[in-house]
Image (cartoon, rainbow over all chains, first blue to last red; front, side, top):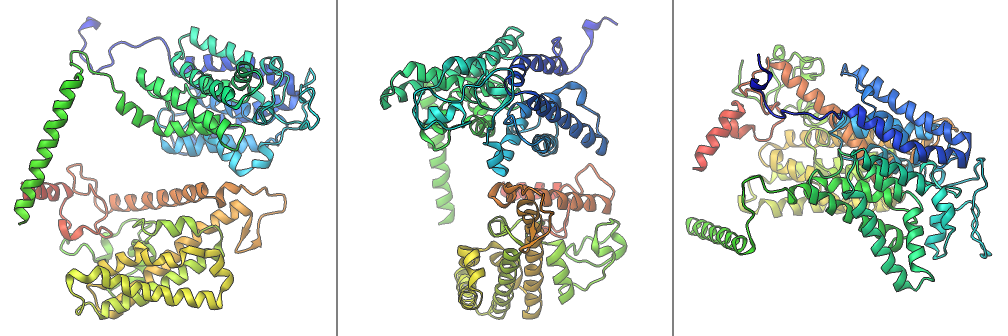
Length: 354
Length: 269
């Protein structure tokens, strides 16, 4: 039979992109940042990445085996989750912590809600927050790494330098940090977040491979940058532009904006929704970092906005082809009509009651 | 198969499920034992009816707290059920809510003072949740659903059963939270010294996590039991599952849910 005459439900044409391909592209895009992390912090960091990825894949495999489900470890989503968890760990962490985080991410956040595509929250970030609340001391202690190059941990010309503090801690105190160190990764922080350049390369790679679109990371970083710049000017910091650049490059913002906020499952599907989502993320991160008491807030902002995705999608639903978008005058008339109907109904009810 | 009295626990051969306790226990309706078993298992206020969530989430940080909260609620529930049942013919229909509140509040105040006097440490750690028993929806719910319609003895037994069910649920949730979150049980070190407490479990998110897991397991048992009782009928015979623990069973009379829904729609027109 002519395949063109086949009758079936939509979708009728499918792209060449499969989940497996997308996930392997994401892993490839994460590699530069991983390499920079390992170069900065030494072999233990590599071990953390391997353990978290392996335990995540193992958790997925055994859960699906136990429940007699089709195994989905081949699509690579569990590996991406595990790798992201590893990249969110401090370099000298005990190995059982990323392992526990991976199991929590895969089983509680992903599989209990029905597996890939049905989780309401980014599994890797959910696990990071779980670990951050549970083992806050261990998750926020950054002790010296034994990497290839020496880390810039102290700000020149400050007497009360905090040993082993992350760049964000300096920025929080209103000081500036060496921007070069932030770009190339020889500073303290989580394994995957130290090198802004490596993360940018990964993000641009994903953009050119059309895995992600610029809307979410662009609006996220843009909104955050504008707000930070204004704050820096208002607070009278020495060099507001430099300060903003440092805020953009420090901490998990790049990692979050390019790789976590753009997760297909937990970000809006509509174009306008994605921009709203990104701007809200930028605003929340600004609130957490510059107004709140903590130094970091990317992960909390992203999981918080993950919860609001259904609402955003509802309000940004595009008009179907062939339909007319109501203009302001018509919308006003519609509202009036509805109000009138409600009033009539209420009046009728009152009469009935009387 | 009798559908006349879906609230009954009789007819043991209807029960096929392994997890359905009534397969093993034969109990007369509204007897003391039946009320207690009903409160602890079939209509467990926390896991089955999902009532009293606020104290369940807030006071289950340790087993000691859970026992204190559960037993004080049990005492109040029994006494308020008893008195509401005794006064049920005097209280006018339109004034029943305020009257119930007054009765419940009196007993809560008594328990509040007693705890303050004799168990000051427990009183400290439970804090505002003791006075808040006044608005605990388990107590209000039982007054509305049971004590206001039944005699004093079954009502007292109902209060006991519901209270124990609440206590058991609190202890179960608290045991998991305390064990994982601080490595202890009722204050005693249980986990080995090398165990690193996962402190999220004693915080609010841990309460939601643990409670959700338990409710999920209980739902699995409940839905499984409802499905096995009768063979699955896609026309909607058992769409809403378990008639036995359904508060709206009076409305549909155990009829298939689809028919009942149709009936109510026609009534609205």
